[in-house]
Length: 368
Image (cartoon, rainbow, N blue to C red; front, side, top):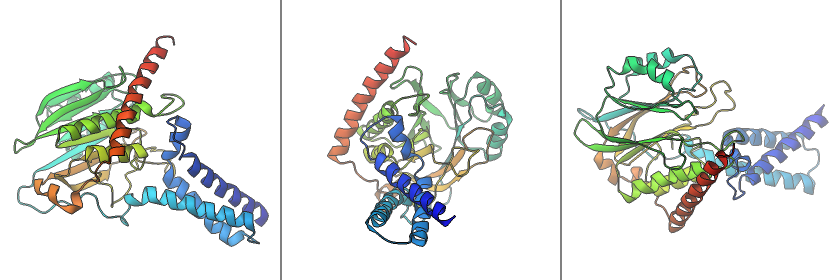
């Protein structure tokens, strides 16, 4: 029995090492980029394998020592990826100050799952939490009709009902200024771009995104997803915008692309130094990671961020409350990591590749 357990431990350790090395391949294919997602799970498996190796290894010969060293390196790499999203890491976004008449903005993001029939669960949640802004993803005409009951409280709306899993709706209590629906790369995947007028008349840009994920059933590569995020990030930086970007990005916060996006855009992640907000998959607690995100300019601090109860979707909704504090921009705890020249070149090249890939996908779809 112990021999079998030892063999299985060696196999698990080898898998952790292999998957870690596999993720370093400079390829955008889904079967490579897919290992970005389960880093928490890989880390847990690696730590368990390490403990069992230390306990069960009868004789430490060259092969066993090599496996141990490789496993420790793999664990170290995975730890570097996920540790920033724990309390062991310095906060990237400062906690909001107690102020008289604070200027706060609450935003709920919910991927509703198009075939989900429990529309009332989201309506009840919105009416209970009363966010200033609601963003729904995968919402079609049926969801649009179900959400009409909240429009008395949310007079400003942008509606893009689609039945291709990329429908998108925006409901706001705050005035939306010149909202636009754009199709940045793919002709059937929308994004919403608008300004929001805060109660002090300050205008803040809001970008709602839901790019196509790399998967065997959707995009063969992550190229268009990565390009869409970086395209918006470069636009925010080039125009020196005070901005919030939110949505289901079909990517995790620790991926190479998302971290580059932060450097390119200058936006901050309120989860850094706090905790994971793992929103997908609702039904599999051990197989969860964060797909639903919010990033914001340094002039916002964090009041609260929480994962909300399930509404019958495969994603949990997320509610984030920010506080507008212009002075926070100059404080060291609010400083974003600057983009390097290499970041700028890489992001530009990735956008070019994304546009080319989008044209290829569009052309291929003509013959399917």
